[in-house]
Length: 295
View: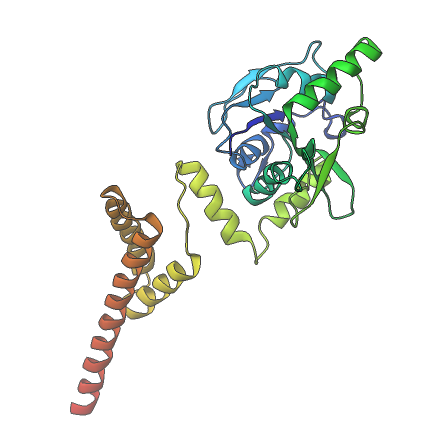
């Protein structure tokens, strides 16, 4: 699906004491980078805010004057896009995921029979509130309404987003857990950092962060790799666990380089290594039993 992305990263962060909010980290990664990870296949990504290092290339722009508010920032970003569908995100969403982005992009692209379709789709948070900065908009009606607001008010500076979205026909997409969680305060940031380390999610969050840091996009079968590490640790020696999983990853990458499906390559390499670990353990158990019998 062809789309452009606009990330608004130029707010004043008053409830954070004016801190550089997009650069604050959750799980060791900047909030802005986490948002960029949720839309890696955008044709063009425009960040409205001050320039900074990012995990992938983006275009930069600023609203004029700086600090003119979300509608002015959205207009500045929209001027740098050409796609018919535009994803609009704030830069403070630590748990935004690609599935939520995909659902937003697909909602206005699947109109009911005999209709032209909605002007876009907006996320609803867990409390049923609209999230206009987690949304996908059709570019033409968005540009039209921004132009009308500018003509009516003489400026876009200081206008609230509801003045824009109220005139658009927007579908609603129910939020996945935490997808709309944003970091407006220091308490929000502390809560996000605590949530990312919760027992039920920490491994998935860690793996996602490592893949982003290493610049790879590979499905990871966590259970298979953990089972392999367990078999290597118990059947051979404890230090064999990380070494074995490293070698499996290396072997899978080599297989993928020759044209194999990456996920299947990981599964096959894991199976072979796990079988070897089990044979190793069976052999050691047999030798132990024989020695005990002869003794």
